[in-house]
Image (cartoon, helix red, strand yellow):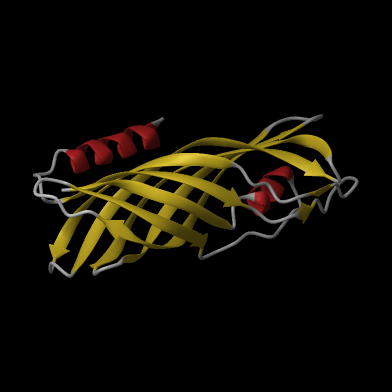
Length: 198
């Protein structure tokens, strides 16, 4: 709850900044994990978990050189649920929700290109069909790139971009339910990002 309040305060501060300072956007994405096998119990195997979700992002430019800008941003991603399956049989669910803060360099050319890093705090819930639920929090740095277009207008500029993100660190231990849920966490995220720059 405390982290959520901190994030909402940061997002509110971003939106209260003067106009001509940044962007507000929505990301619709697909998160893709990696297939894993538990190294405890019966060694249950799981296919990759690949939920679909959306995120809200706010950012402001701390340096703007017209052709390029350095932006600080904050992102909140909704709770997604993916089925834990193997061979077509469902063995439970994995929930994932995250918030992130980061920095990005945006090049404003004919085609807009952005590259940056962010730190994500991911809240995971491993919910097997039989057994107890396991909650864990995973903090990882992620790299993001996006490519897209913007429509320059006098007041705000609508934009859209294809965005790809991947964690810079990964967990592969599967000795406990907590380890297993972290190993099943997303390994790549692909989405369409759009919004307005002002």
